[in-house]
Image (cartoon, rainbow, N blue to C red):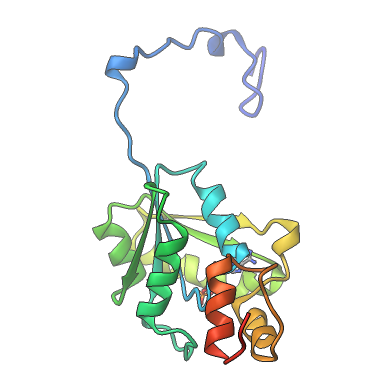
Length: 189
Ligand code: ADP
């Protein structure tokens, strides 16, 4: 491509991008759907939501109710705890769902499903889920955000185990979550 390439558009064609006047710019509300068990919500999850807000206008944190995992916190407890964390963030909505993820995404008019990837151990499962979802609903893209380095070891399972053994986990979760874990396991902080 003369003067540039597909990857670095420095050719003359790319110099004259017309400015779109503000009054005819479409009002976009790009919705991203971040599903998970969130049992409980950790700083790793929080990092993914915060970064997703750079990509989407609205992010739905969607608590799955049909997971095969048995949960420590009830659905209602998880919903209340996560809603409290985002109570001052109008662009984050906390919801739960029971139907198929891609159907729920379509109902919400989400353009994308958001998932976090910590390590290669997450990859096989995420890849399979991506393929199946894409097969069922090709219109809905899945965006994977790699975990920030400091949260790459963090999982709800590890957090629950530490809290169960009586250690305060406030370093790893929003304060309301570490308090809820301490209450759950009968430790008081
Ligand atoms: P699920 O049961 O759907 O895996 P989780 O609550 O464990 O639900 O995780 C929800 C999403 O957040 C998944 O995509 C998971 O990979 C991602 N995630 C979990 N912990 C972290 C973390 N520390 N950093 C980045 N992403 C994470």
